[in-house]
Length: 194
Image: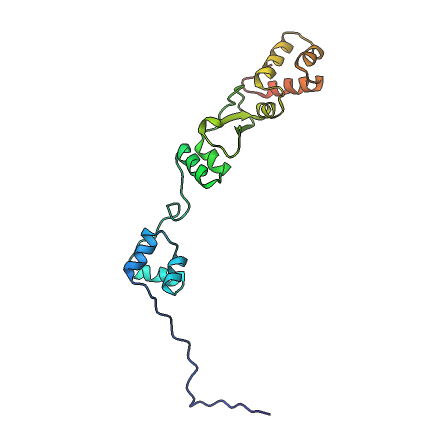
């Protein structure tokens, strides 16, 4: 059996020496600001961590990049510029498109102001002219070749003029139940269709 004794006169166990950074301040500035590398990438080049690079930048009084600038995620303010960017990268975000398109106030076909959506013929959107603001019924009509807003308004107008739901259903190729759904929708709209 081996016995271990504590020897107070023995040399204390020391930590390994700190690694020296292999980059100068000018090189850090160049890689970070000109090459647009992240702190972690600059740290790998210098043989240290990104946190150490950050400490040295504070010590040298270098300014950090703000979030949303190049090197981070770009912040788009123009729809055409964003669409050009998405054509080159092949990626597109609906939330960015919704932010850049004019406010969704009314349907582009029927003028409805409720349940509005951003609609495009193809995805991803290639040109700003492809984007349309549509209500849910006009969107479904485009997708399924059903009743769009103007046809629904016509049904409401003719029903209030005295035509029967059965005749309207036959003429427009829908069920009577669908005619009544259109009439309910027309009463909810502002301004009302029926």
